[in-house]
Length: 110
Length: 117
Image (cartoon, rainbow over all chains, first blue to last red; front, side, top):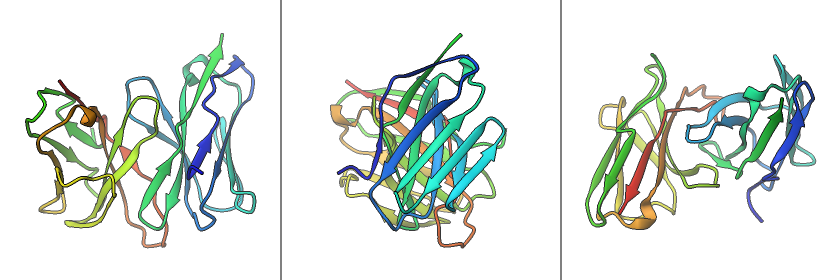
């Protein structure tokens, strides 16, 4: 079982819709959770961090964490073509480093 | 620009040669990480420093790889006797250390793309 699992996609949504990205993880002791956006050929860019159960909102982005279900998600409201990218879920491994998923490729159709 | 910087951005080398990459973290960050990313995969952790101390190395990091952060500022990653399988994007990230017993937010540099012929 991989430490972090994501659906590789591609996930296609129309412009203005809500995009929902999901991630599950295997280590019950994980304490830190992150979503990164990565455009093709570029490095990952931090979008959201979440450390506690529940929702965290930042602009059009909402991260949701459920530690009991070992599940973290990212919602993107009012999706824009510029949101088209690969979204990486990252989960802490101990107190020092991160495991990344393979990413979900999102395409927003104008 | 006060973000993480990496140099060079691209490196093409022949198998068997040594290469060295540099990373300059965000100035107030005392944690520095190296990752490797291949096509279609997420970044894989290689090693990390807190100040000048190298505190953890991945089992992925063979003896041909060495990293340093001599003054707790910039870091170098050297690969000796490169192999074609070393071709990847090498990413550096830095983070503050909040002392809250968790992994803090990490900010990535632009990466160094290595091609081994």
